[in-house]
Image (cartoon, rainbow, N blue to C red; front, side, top):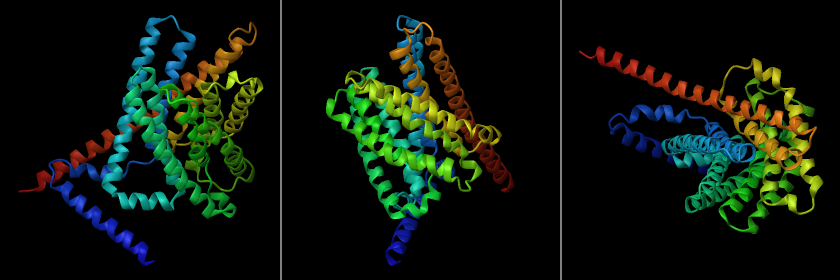
Length: 373
């Protein structure tokens, strides 16, 4: 108890010192309260933007390889998406600084919902690194990759410690986002290969695949079989279940798995996406009725992953099939459009919230200024 009190006291002192410093800066203190309200799901939106950037590049390369217009358009949109994702990461990083590192680390250590979603931050770095490698900025991609992987492994260790501490009795607390710390590690393999780190990075894929055999069934069982009462606002997080099989499929192809004569395995991974899509579809009526909330951002990156996986499957195995080609290309295009719509919608709502806050704060400042004689 004494140690916990010490942490809280140091955190409070740290926050008061920093807050006092901010209040002495012109026009800076007014934003500190707003930054403290930035949710961790802002990192999910950043990941959605970064993955959508890669999806645009994949669609352009596979569907319009000879079109200069679409290639330039895809690179332009990818750069814009990565810049927006970077801005969101900076925004959340500013929140960590303002709230105090000790307080943040205490929340990270004690709350698995924070650690399970904070990996969206590190996964975004790895996804941006992949885009940078595509544009031949290998040195910057390597820096982001190393930071992302080291941070992801650190958060993963914290999450696994929390999971062991909780035990099986607390399965009711599990959400779909809990699968991402372990399975998200697979992103290090594909982006590492693109940067040129060598075949050793495939180890991350196999570790993620093995962990998926444990954590993914537990999450599916908790959500769709055991199905205890879940807060209505968390229904959007069920879409996250699309991300693991889609991500594993993408990374398996990225590390050259299709050349290892395990041909049926690519089909197993892809059709597991379809099975999960059917499960997620049962949540669709609730999601449609649900009003916008911060967890809506958790729908962005799974749809982008699924769209990219579908177009890669079509190109690799169905594009030459006279009868089945359009059967797989059409869902890929629809998922691509849906991913763009969801990411765009969440971005607009996020920006609208910022503008609304700024407008209200400006109005309050004018009222306070007018009240002074």
